[in-house]
Amino acid sequence: MAKSLGKEKNMEDFLISTNMTKEIAILYQQIEDRYCKMAWNHTLQLKESDQREAKSKKLKLWKQILSAVSSAGIITILFTSFGWEMWLELATALVSVATMVITWLCDNGALDADVVKARSLAAECHNMRNMYDSLLADIKSGSIEIDEVRSRRSALEAAENELLKKEFLSVSPKAIQLAEEALKVKREAQTTEEERRTIIPIHLQLDN
Image (tube, rainbow, N blue to C red; front, side, top):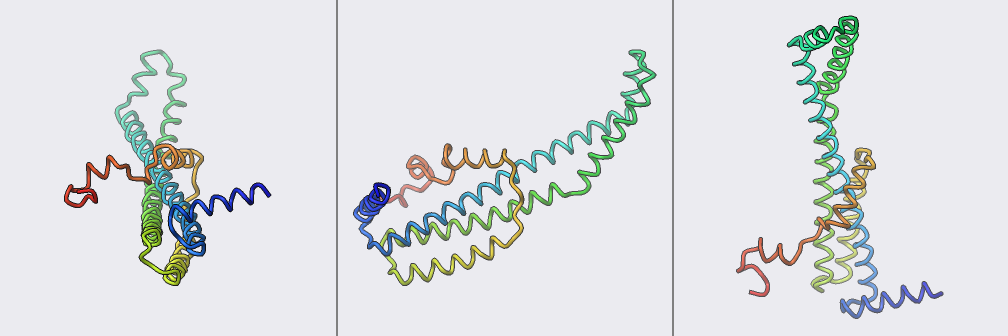
């Protein structure tokens, strides 16, 4: 009961602070939730693409290093110098196998393709988030009526359903951690007052 009263009190405060009708306020909060989910989807795919790009770069670096080691005969020189000739054949074989595996991973192109795919999906999620942002701004400004709110919400819902039918990349725990830090700690989805005053031309700022 106390929890229910708390929710009612929050709604009353919300209505007073925004000067909205209860019907529009309920729609507003629903759209807020969808905005947040789309912000999560955008950031998760972006962070996952960063992780896979970093992995791809490391593999390409190791490919260059192992190729250089093999072609320059460094293994033979090193093992001969230390009197490890008995291990030379094994070491050479291991380096050859490692080079072959890494070359296959690089030439396969799967990681690079995943990076492109994740960034494309992130861009679509970002666009969807911006559309929710615009709708929330129009509602809060009082420039649209409830029928238009419902219509635009339904259109966005249909577009979001089509977007989420696409095959999103599985997200690693590291990407989830980075996304949470970006959204909740660094607040990368928000614009600060300092940024507005620094980036937006003075003649376009509201208080000038």
